[in-house]
Length: 325
Ligand SMILES: [Zn+2]
Image 1 (cartoon, rainbow, N blue to C red):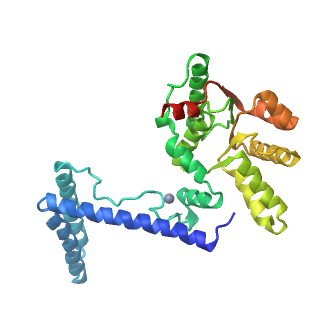
Image 2 (tube, rainbow, N blue to C red):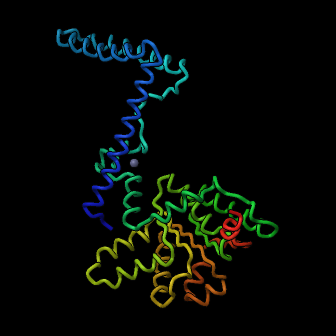
Image 3 (cartoon, rainbow, N blue to C red):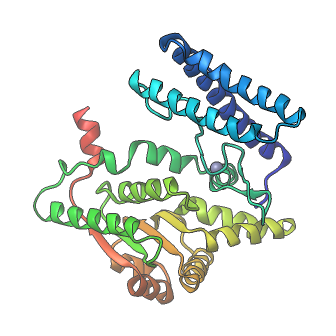
């Protein structure tokens, strides 16, 4: 889907803000170093002075001036680095600061072959706007591998959860070279969405194109575009992203109003992604029997045939957390 002009400007404003904040921080660090390390500021200025002097000598016809400047500047740069680390600062303390080093917070990669190629951080910002992916942001803010706890499980439930965590970690680890799909199923509040969120978080950080939809929202969007006659282009863009994103997460399958439209759409989606070897994660409170009853046999066999089935069980953790608060 394409951004509106306004959305595009909003994203560019975000990058401006980031660059502005980082420039301010750089300036603050520079002043701090000037204050704390005697002689550092003079050294900094003398490097600029050396460049000016060389330019002057070059204009006067002294072609060896460049070489002697190189030596002089190199020596001063080494001196600066030594002063910085001796005073206890990290060696890169005065290097430019970027939130995304790949595009230097411009949104575009500086590629000579493909100029104006969008950076993955820009793609994520677009996706956030286009598909209202705020849900995934909320999910991963509180649910990621660092907040993982086994405290709510015991016995067989604990074994299952440990197994599912291991499968999730392997999924992230091998994501680049192996094609796998995951199907988390089991009763309410046993950690299914949590694990999807953990995986999404890791892969987003690696710069992958991850789309997250609650089942209700996925079919709602597909229906909106399918039945709005004048929106053909956005539908094909939406389908394109759903079929081609690196990872698609469908959360809470079965909570939507199931009918022949959703069943067909679900099959198409799973099938297209399978053909492209693009990974999908589905979570659901349905049992396998309920899955078979509710969707077509084609959907059922796609899932049981091509997905790692991960059953989770136990008490409802969300309820436990609420009660203990
Ligand atoms: Zn970037």
